Image 1 (cartoon, rainbow, N blue to C red):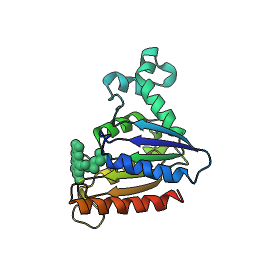
Image 2 (cartoon, helix red, strand yellow):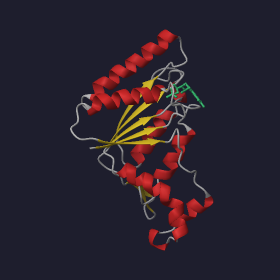
Image 3 (cartoon, rainbow, N blue to C red):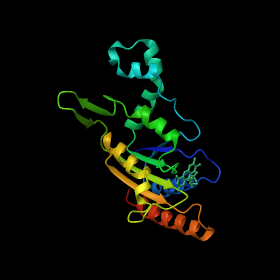
Length: 207
Ligand SMILES: Cc1cc2nc3c(=O)[nH]c(=O)nc-3n(C[C@H](O)[C@H](O)[C@H](O)COP(=O)(O)O)c2cc1C
């Protein structure tokens, strides 16, 4: 079983998403026989942003790419390979400005690529997904609270975007655990963190 852990908080010290992901992974691994775990820390080391040269290389058919174009796409190809061969994916994702951290968006731009992780049929205008058989867990810390049914639910662009983009490339089994109120009182923060941890420990038994 290959587990890919993607961390996107720019913080190491005191990061709630990193701490809860570690606790979940530790508990989950105790139920697994053989796990190969890989950490992709885009919070600490964001992938290169796409450039004009990258775009040209991306839309050039693989057999027609020059060495320079292949070099341009090398990091993206490595990230896609890493994702494509993982069966379980844990994402630590703080909410930044109501959406995902820039570093994670840079990762997404590198791995969501036509004919690599999704397909596009020009004759029908239909998209297809090229990844299969994976489960993802998103642990999303945030200062406020955006739970379904609350007035602020509509301004959480993090959850709907991540669910959509993972589905788009074929990752349909997605668990999303919100860790709200991180700027609340210490009691509010502690309670929100404990509630999320309880859900994670329960999930670790069956995921
Ligand atoms: C650049 C930046 C933007 C943020 N934007 C939001 C936001 O829009 N809504 C929110 O509730 N919290 C926001 N926060 C707070 C973080 O989501 C919160 O501190 C979270 O716990 C960070 O995750 P971490 O502890 O894993 O680093 C923001 C934090 C940063 C650094």
